[in-house]
Amino acid sequence: MSAFVENIDWAEIGQATVDTLSMLGGSMVLTVILGLPLGVILFLTGKGQMLQSRVANGVLSLVINILRSVPFVILLIVMIPLTVALVGTSLGVAGAIPPLVVGAAPFFARLVETALREVDKGVIEASFAMGAKRRQVVLGALLPEAMPGLIAAATVTAIALVSYTAMAGVVGAGGLGDLAIRFGYQRFQTDVMVVTVVLLLVLVQALQMVGDTVVRRVSHR
Amino acid sequence: MITFQDVSKTYAGGGRAALTGVSLSVAPGEVFGVIGASGAGKSTLIRLINGLEKPSGGQVIVDGDDVTALGVEGLRALRRRVGMIFQHFNLLSSKTVAGNVAFPLKLAGVPDAEVKARTAELLARVGLSEFAAKYPAQLSGGQKQRVGIARALATGPKVLLCDEATSALDPETTEQILELVSNLNRELGLTIVLITHEMDVVRRVCDRVAVLEGGAVVESGPVEEVFLHPASATARRFVMEADGVPADGAMVGGRVVRLTFRGEATYKPILGLVARETGVDYSILGGRIHRLRETPYGQLTLALTGGDVEAAIKRFQADGVRVDLVTEAGR
Image (cartoon, rainbow over all chains, first blue to last red; front, side, top):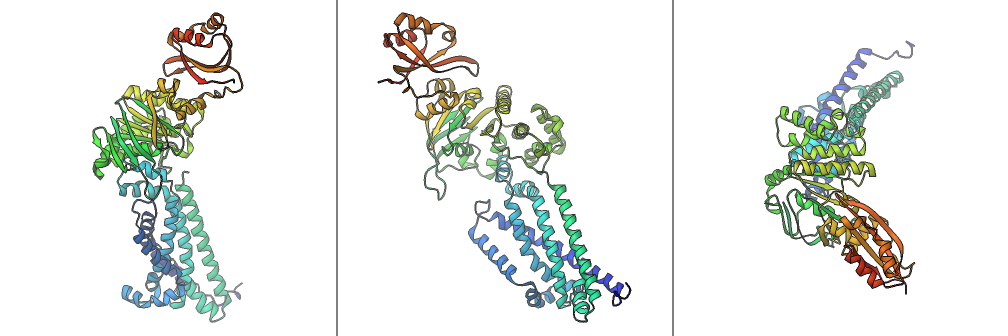
C-alpha cells in the first residue's frame, strides 16, 4: 500500500483540494450572478415573451454562442491579458476564476433559458391577470416555478466547472488538475494521478447528489 | 358592467380575424355565457375584458373604464377588480395553496397580517381550509379549481372571468364548481362571464348567452330563449349536442316537429288528447325533461303522420305549447 502511494505528499494534495474547491466556489458564485440574468434576458427577449426583441435576443444569443464555441483550453490562453487586467495575475486560484466564469456563464445562461421555457405559460398569464407587474411576474412566478430546473442547471454547470478547473491547471491555476498534470502526467507518478482523479470523482459525485437532493426538495410538481 | 362595441381582433401575422364586429353588453350581477367551438374566438373575447389581449378595433368598456385606453397602472388596478379562473387552473406549483391565494394580495402590496386573515377567509369560503399547507400537485382537479376561485376572489373583484373553467373536470366536479360559481354570483353579486364549448354549462348557470361562430356573435339572448328555440345553426348544434337528440327525421315519415312545454303545459296529458282529437299518429324521436336553472321544461321531438297535422299543431299551440318545425320529412 505504502509502495503504491510513495510519491504522494498529502499536504500538497490537501492544498490542491482546497484550491480546486476555492476555484469552484468562486467561479460558481460569479457564474450564477452573471449567467442567471443573462439567461433570464435571453428568455424574456425570445419569441412570444414579454420583452420580445429579435435584435436583443439575436445579439445576446450570438455572443453566447461565440463564447461557447471557443474550446476552454483556448479561452484560458486568450483570456490571460484580460485576467491580468482584472485580478492582477493569471496564476493561482485568482487567475483561474475569470476564464472559468467566462467559460461557464454562457453555458449556464443557456441552461437557465431552457429551464424557464419549461414554465407553464398559463401560470405567467394568470400572474398578469392578477395584476402583477413584469418584475413581479419574473421574481414572484417565473423564477420560483423554474426553481427545480434552475437548480439542476446549476448542478450541471458546477460539474462542468470541476473539469474546467482541472484544465485550468495547464496555465498554472493550481488545484487537483494541476497536480495531475505536473506529477501524474509529466513525471509519470501514476499514484498522484489516481488519487487526484478519485478526489475529482468524489467531488463530482457529491455535487450531483447535493444537486439532486435540492431539486427534490424544491420540486412540488 | 362590460360593453363590447364593434370589437375586432386580428393577431399580428395571423391572417384570419379572431373576432369581427362583436358587440355585446353584460349587466352587473349577471352570469353571461359565451359558447362556441374551439377556434371561434372565445378565449380572445374573454382576454379582451382584462386586457390580456388588445382589440384591433372597437372599444371594450369594463366597470366604466375603456380597457384599451388604460395605462399600465390603470390596467393593473382593473385586473384587481376582475378575477379570472382557467381551464388548467394555472396555479403556481411552487407555492402552497395558501401561498397561491395570497399571491394576488402580495402583488397588490397588502400588509402581511391582512393577507393572512384574508387568505384564511377565502379558503374557508371554498371549503379548503385544511388544505392551506398543501401544494397544488397534491390536490384533485376540483380542489385545484377551488383554489383558483379563491385566488381570483382575493382582491375582492366585481367581475369573475371563467375561461373554460370546468372543461378539464369530470361531470360531478363540474357540477360542484358550477354550484360554487352560482353561489358567488348570488351571495357576492359578482358579475360572471364564462366561456365554454358545453351547452350544459350554459344551461346550468347562465342568465344570458352569446353564441360565437368564426369570430362573430351569431345569436344572443336569454338562455331559455336560445336553449329552447335556437335560431342559428350553431346554437342548434350545441343544443343537440347537449341533448343527444338526433336532428335527423329522415328515418320516419311525416312532419318532424319539436314541442316545447314550459310551466303549466309541462304537466298536461296533452299528447294523447291531441292524437285522439285530430287522428294524428306520433312517433317520439327524442325528448327531455329538465330544468333551466329554476324553470322546469319539457321538449319532445315528434314525427306526426296521418290525420290533420295542421290541426294538431294548432291544437298544441292553443294549449301553450310551442311548436317548431324541424323538417318536412317523409317524402
